[in-house]
Image 1 (cartoon, rainbow, N blue to C red):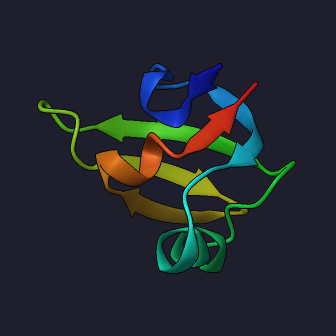
Image 2: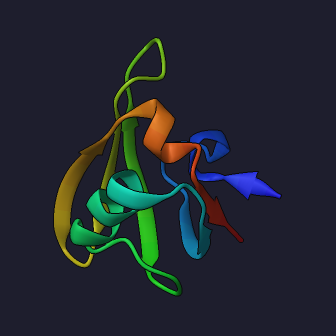
Length: 73
């Protein structure tokens, strides 16, 4: 199992599964991050927070804790 937090900058991955529950999962899904979507890692801050990604043409910032809940392949 690999999470979005472990993906290197410049890599594009496909979302496999979202873990987490309730409002956190809902917030991630509201950003357009759902199963099967491609996520491109644009930038990661020096301490790993935030992770900046491009999803469906939108540039987003994810908290490190949220990135850990997104399983990718």
